Image (cartoon, rainbow, N blue to C red; front, side, top):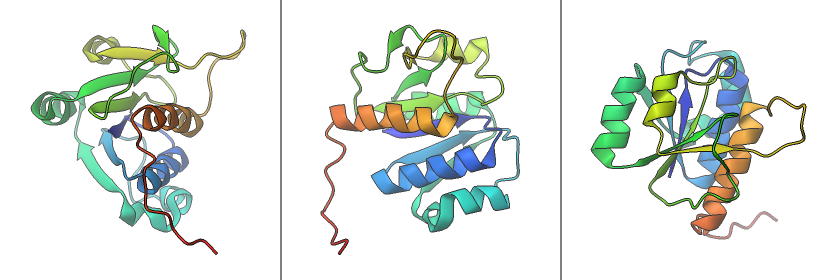
Length: 159
């Protein structure tokens, strides 16, 4: 399972998502162009020392990502969008999924929607537009890991 970010705008969200990925052993794909320099201080501050524990793959554009990650690796593209067809809670995740999150300011364009194998939404009260990208990612990835038994880690002594 992987997390992919489509042209992210906000370095703090990207850093937080990379930290999430590091904690759960997931890779992150960033589909460019990003709205910030990936050496940004805010990205590093949000990711703390977890960034070096994350496997990061940069893609110059969506076509490069689609060819080199989805088609070549035979993975299923699962898009989170406010226009999603089903609740993320009703979707059946597999370990072969890439959870794709859209750009904070604009989501994803129609060709990206069309390439997705599934489009998911997070149910919420009427009148609310959306959640923060990092929060949405954590909710969806948490459910995906729960369904696929992805929370099987060695116990750490945190005492």
